[in-house]
Length: 332
Image (tube, rainbow, N blue to C red; front, side, top):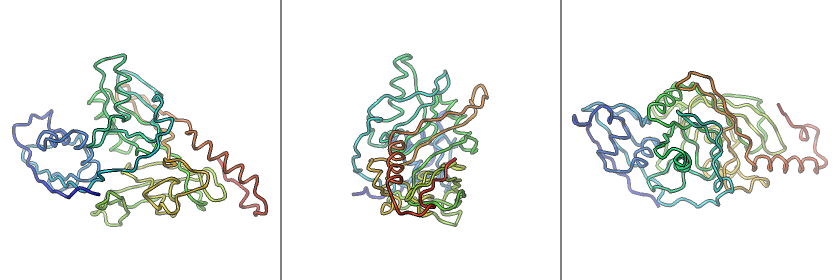
């Protein structure tokens, strides 16, 4: 069941001071809706400024600018996934200083709350942990991972640091490397997928060739290991669009295992019974916004990935009568 569509146009008034003219703040104040809802609308291509689509929550708007908000349908209820032990456990910190922290997000956990104000989110849990040491601590989201995806995320401790990090992402400077287990054997050792991603009324993303119809999306992939009927691929993002990796790999005919949205009919495997997507943000590299130091962090494979590898390896060793090519793995 979906909410009805509603389009609203508002004009930025003169009485909003410059520090409060960031797009998300303006929407919150003028529409009277929670900040989480404002961020959700911007992230899901529901907002245009002066008739140009905008997904930058920190965009500085000016008096007189016209903001159009297209409240596209949003699921009222979502399937309840079984919580993993990682989601219930503590958050792993890879780095922590006065400006930022780098953490490993478990699967089955939202990065930030939606308009429904979920109590359990990564941002909330990280902030609560930091408040144990510094009661006034705050956390600002810089980038996100889907609920069912795990891996490395950097979070800022001030709005100024968050803006500097977001600018790095906007300029495509961070090195973002993922690993994914996909259906069937990927024959090409490497490749690049480039197109434009649009969003339908059910929030599904799909590829279009017309730049005016979508957002530029560029994904580079490389095979790290092949099994009989699945492949481990390394993915590097040049752009960071919502669901980008999931859509691009599904369009190749190799959807990520466990993906309930893109090529679900192919995204199943006997050794992947988990209620999560087989996608993990393995490493993240960026420049420290204060010191200028180059930093890179790596998150270990989730237990599900290790169990899958053991399972398909045992299956391969126990199988007989296959060709030599089918028995060989391609590894780093």
